[in-house]
Length: 179
Length: 119
Image 1 (cartoon, each protein chain N blue to C red):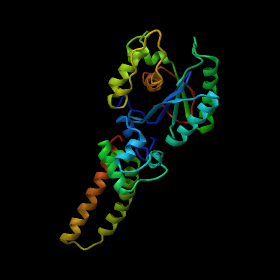
Image 2: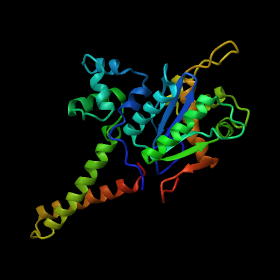
Image 3: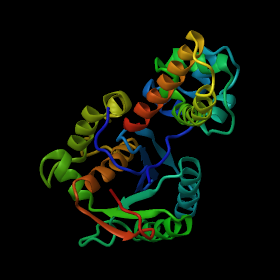
Image 4: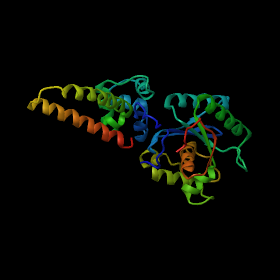
């Protein structure tokens, strides 16, 4: 199942407290790879290393991350630092970096700004039933930790926010159009 | 400039079925998933037999499963078909050479159609 068309392969990264989720979306909107990576020690350095491996493997033209500079940024200091490190990684790898507002993804997929992560995940599972259908976590109760698989859905949702036109291009290769 | 398709889509095929590399290796009659990992990370190209086995397990046509390789071969064959068309154009007209010209033209037309379609 595909979503939107793009001229570029996109790698989306969604960092979490336990590691990061990633998604590789092909130019025809199909998911080429997706997953959640758990990291125990030196989280930022290891995440950058793992993302570099993904870049080397899939050679994406665009790296998509959350806009950590967005106001109000509710992410921890470590995650904001990781965002900076990923910006540098994109620049050193010669790929475009696009930061998106995660609320834009929620608005688009969940229908409104206050849509829950669960409803966004369910919507994404409808869009990609074969790929993500079996990965939807059980509905979270207040005493439960967030399921690690939610990071995959967050990563998949990020490029869809770009498609809705709500994005900020912070770095772009000369003459390269982000369409 | 559009991105070329990946050499293969074995990893997404496997993840769609929620199978591990070891499980795919087992289905193929192999011991461990290391070889599967090599194929998925594009460091080795599978043999014809292994490629067919992937097609059977994932239920996907080989031209989609090995899209990048398919695209490269199609491009190379299309280039050579142009040379062949030039060569056969000088042959004397006979039923056989007519058939040959038609085959080459059809090959080029198919390649042109495939190029126009979004991958």
